[in-house]
Amino acid sequence: MEKPVVQMEVVRRSAPGPGLREHPALARYLALGMVAGSLLFTVAWFVLGFLSPGFTIFGTVIEPYTPISQPLSGLGLGHTGPYMNAAFVLSGLLILVGVIGVFRGMTELESAARRLCTVLLALSPLGMVIDGLFTLESFLLHMLGFLLGSGSLVVSFLVVGRTLRHVPGWERFGRWLNLASPLTLALFVLSFTTYDQAAAAAGLGIAGLAERILAVEVSSCFVVMGWMGFRRHAPA
Image (cartoon, rainbow, N blue to C red):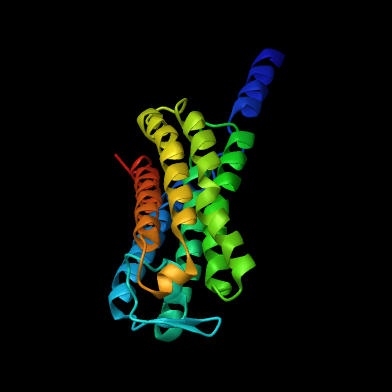
């Protein structure tokens, strides 16, 4: 009679604990936060870019607003400021929830790997929230937000991509993230080096265009990841 008891105890200990399979349906819907947040942010800067008459920074009036030359953060000043800053914060929070949902439902990974991927990708939405709370006139804090929001993804995409290449159903996306890492680096450097306040004030340069391409590339990765996290646990 002792042997069956021992076997039952082994099965119980080898079964997934509550931390591994907590409400898979909830994790599935949380993953959609990455989709919603990315789309909200993209629609916000796209629409507000046409509505902004210009803005004032450090006493310099920049008008009219030109999406090709002037950065997204310029929309956080002037008449469009409250809307763009709200979009920064809300989009960042939604994407953060989505990141948690995607890796909470990825039970194929060890807990340590899931936590590492979650923390790395959470840096980007955290940077978005910082940019929404501190505008270009709080230059150092705003640039910290930009560094976290975009620059951190160079490392995050590389590490997360290598991890996902070993998860069934995520192998191809993991390879895409590995390719997205150097692309993000190139666009980040281009966006950073082409920004010049004097040129932006004169409506010259391509800083705004470079930053928008970077934003679309990053948002596309988040949308695909969130949608895959939602679809993979869909009921049969």
